[in-house]
Image 1: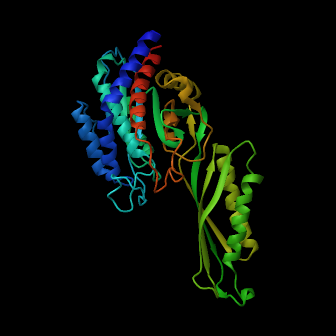
Image 2: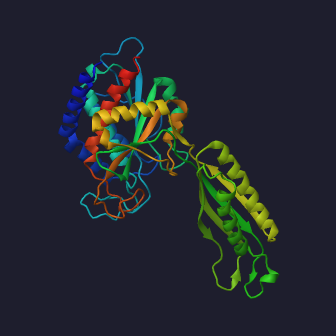
Image 3: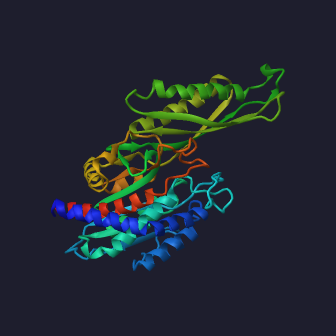
Length: 407
């Protein structure tokens, strides 16, 4: 289709996104008031399902106890229709909100501190726009409202294992995530490895307790734990090549309960982040060796448990290049930025192992954003006008990629 056609289409979608903004805002605030943790999103699922039904979109039979999947069939699809998948996550975090606005979480110890309420509302807004324009769609749009992104093993892999892609066969998948360090109205994209593989580390050091005044008569696990932490931190600079990002952080240590007693055992936990699978395996192996050998050298026993988390999130370069064009058409080229890789993790990575796609940062910040306005913070407070941007951009992306897929 001509450039003029898509220019007019983008203008029409922007107009529609602005018109439904109050409705999408209300959806977001409803979800924010009633956050639900991973695999507990019963109310959120019902809200999403009811809204889709109100648009004339019937959700598919559920593949998991929570979450929703729906297909918008394009009116101009011919033969075997191409499918573009759009994904939003729906779960909240176990965090007590400390904001002061009048729609703070009503659930003690639970908060949408990562923007999943924003993501879900944006995708519902896009569904609203697409439902009203489906006769012009040249393929089908798969809407994925995914549970449990925040808690490993996550909701993406169980959805795939339950046959999501085997049933709908998307040719491309698109996701977006709120980022307060990107200004509202802008997006940032990254080709290739964008987000890290994340593994949880659990170390246990067992020795022989005793009186702190006579450490020579004990086997001190506290001392060994200190050496292990220092040695583990050295792995990044001495094992990982300088051009390959890696992070090892020991974030908690527990042992003992008195100032004059050497405890029998110390436990530690932390995280490991890497940007490719080869380095991931190497650092895991070296961590196991480091903990056991350092412990042995100090006369105690070291045990290691590494729980593998989400894989590296790899944005398909060709899809990402097309997405940059699409975002520029809808937002203007000055509002499309290039992102650096980051060491946070996302289970959207599982979809990208099965289907070409890309995952971009959508801006929810402002030049005057408060210092505490960060992801996973009790004061995370995204600019809500981003809902209009995200709803319209997803809808326009669906039209544009279905046109690409005709070729």
